[in-house]
Length: 553
Ligand code: SF4
Image (tube, rainbow, N blue to C red):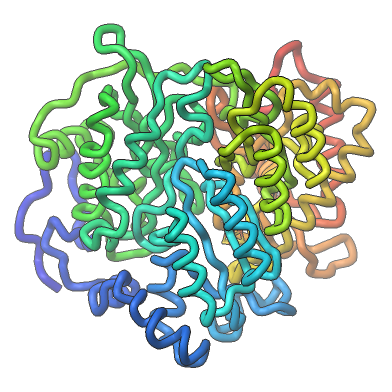
């Protein structure tokens, strides 16, 4: 192992741990198998093999290092082999869990799509993905049942329409969150979509930014609608008293194990400078991020060790070569804005946000929504970070017909509080890490609570958020829900090992930003989930003070 060759910036104020595998300190020799694989062959090189070898010779020709590693840089994972229960998830070798089909994520930075793109996404699902499609909480569309033979065809059709799976996963800048209503929302500080587009043009697919210590999540919005507190880097709209509208810079958010909320650097960034500052932050992560242990490789660990002041100093002195302007904090909303319902745009038209259950739609649904949107005079839709779908630019006289058409597709613009607030990750159906089922359980939970709480649902002015994860990772942001449910095997009253959840209570974002309390032994058996949530909701409604939100209760 090479010894560190130079001091860390600011040495003396924050002692840097030795041996974290930071490139900037001279640790260029890979210190774990993931780093070795990336050094041996840059992940972006796998595309040529997919197009020229694997898609022609079939699944068995795929190099395992590509299949379980470099494929992710193209939004591809193997999906879970059907029939393996959650109790065996951790006990089997990766190849025993692998199905011969792939999961594919299509990135839609900022969530915006034309109706032609949405229709294409639906048709590709019908033709190649057994009609599967989920809206993820990163504004991606996620397919299942993809055959390696079909990948080049899917790519060429996506790319002809301006869409891509490039860096949708992997140790790279993944699909970036942006306001789904940028440019039309009446209350936005500014329209940040051009910054997102410029970052995508300049940096996505550039090998210089595609070998990071781990994944890198970005959120940029003129509105508090992109869960900015839990991204690696976020730019949030704020008005500076002297300089006017711009963006407030946050770094180091992330959930999963060791969850941390992002920290403000206290810097106001003009819109035109966002791509440069983003490049500075991602470069710090590339150069100073911890590459020795995968479990410490997210940016949040570096931010925690350095602190916000040192991070800003390194950004200014080593990367930007100039000082940033101090700026104010944006106002916190009660919770991230979900855009569900009918809202007037700046131009007098309307956007209509509708809720599927936990992001589950289908290819056929996407095609039908594209048709319905066009009938309503719209040419644009958007996916949201809360697994919702919005039709933009609808004239007033077409709103009711559109709402009815969407409802026919299972997309409700006036949803119950439970349909609106339940989120779920992929879970046991397709995810190799999963221990419990999530999507079907979310659907059942919503249906049950709509009935069992019918007498009180109207009193839930602010819905109680319920997030279901299939394992200890936090793809559905379990720690930031009012009721966070982390899948695990639990013991029931008869001593049997069954699917269940560790409960986290009282987490939130916005005004309630913080992680839910994980009480020891606070677990619920999956079959008893509805009754558990119902009891909590009734107790909250009976015991709350006027205006008190669940997280405060
Ligand atoms: Fe898979 Fe776990 Fe993420 Fe759910 S939280 S999608 S089960 S890794």
